[in-house]
Length: 291
Image 1 (tube, rainbow, N blue to C red):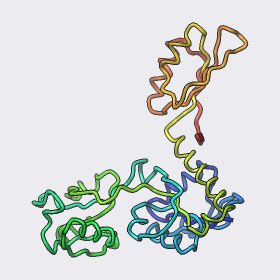
Image 2 (tube, rainbow, N blue to C red; image 1 turned 180 degrees about the horizontal axis):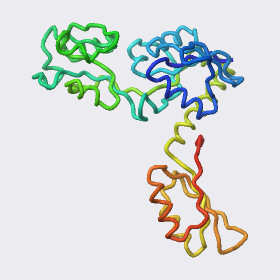
Image 3 (tube, rainbow, N blue to C red; image 1 turned 180 degrees about the vertical axis):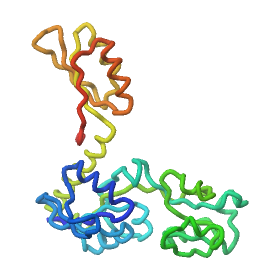
Image 4 (cartoon, rainbow, N blue to C red; image 1 turned 90 degrees about the horizontal axis):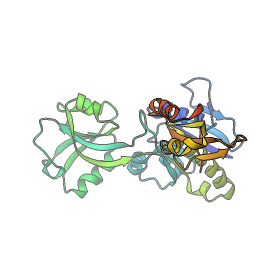
């Protein structure tokens, strides 16, 4: 029913892991294959392409559904329907930023201080020109096809580039002057496919599974038994996503408690729960959380 295009390159590994967690495992002969499949009746064709190409192909209806970044949607000015942000990136769950960076020793402290005809290298020429025009800066924008950071200061005076943590920029002696755009990965659809009721229902299902897998990340399910006289003390210690589920057991003086908690910190939480009176504590991985 749906044709799906996924990003090749830096987002590829994280995307495959997300689809696997969502029970939409992508199968292909090797990591060099551009054609793939998903054992799901809602998806009949899967391709891998560079994320910068995906918005335009979705806009033209060559694919029904795809994953790309808000950065490339903005750069290409493609008219696509967003089905929501998927909060993951290459290495973290944080958004990436499109930033203007200059050498650490450069005298400029704001965009407005950039000199006329300043040379700026970027993989986002359209986005960069719109940003500079809005700030009244007349610059020479030079398209980059990789290794953008290496072009400063010998070839250009500044760059506009993606950063997730900023560490690579600092390592190359650059500092961020301004942020042009904050970008999450997005699930997007073509307008024509979105207006088809059957395809839209299938898209909503896919979006639900992916967002549920993302929401489950970093969380675990705790199950424990608690004596009635210890219940208040134990439940006060639980940093639940929602109120814990409490069930009275056949033994009236015991209660079963279930709750979702962050994985981070569970190493100190479990001993504390035990000390407070909890028994038979189980920690269970979660693959999806769907409201």
